[in-house]
Image 1 (cartoon, helix red, strand yellow):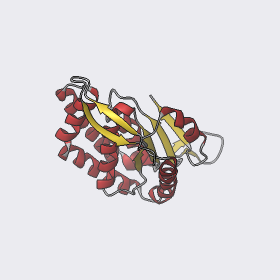
Image 2 (cartoon, rainbow, N blue to C red; image 1 turned 135 degrees about the horizontal axis):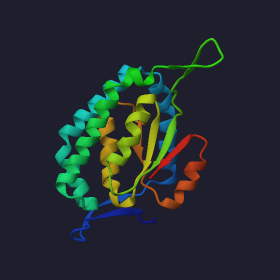
Image 3 (cartoon, helix red, strand yellow; image 1 turned 60 degrees about the vertical axis):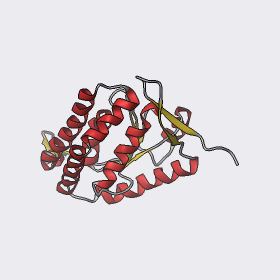
Image 4 (spheres, rainbow, N blue to C red; image 1 turned 180 degrees about the horizontal axis):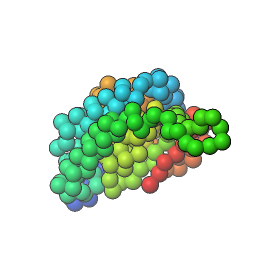
Length: 209
């Protein structure tokens, strides 16, 4: 039997290992992609108000877990504790801001044209692949996904290997907020597996930093 491949989190201040995370198998990645696609249909059928309420629940959990999330960021990528707390606070802020403007943001916007009635409407795409960096392990996810979730999309997050713990903590946080299981999922994979994901017909857009 082959040994399980793992990603190690190393504290940059001490060089000590913080944790090891099992790499997702191809079958597990395919399962998560399918789950993101399945739950995107249910999520897009919810109302703007329901999605806004979910974002507020996420914000409340960010407040509750502020210290644990901040300490995890300190351990995994070396951010000063005050900056890590501020990053968690900013994520809660953007969730509440997005929720407070949900109905206005998603309302069709009338535009002038030669037709009797013309408007711009925001529709969800479906599963999005997010390739995220290590330096703002929480904010880089929330700065795109608060709005994307409000519109009705789901997300698959391929985070920097050094901040795998932060990615998995965010996955747990969203699930604990009572949203569909496939709304936000972390992918613990190598970078050379990303092209196949981009080519997957179920992945409808890619965002990266």
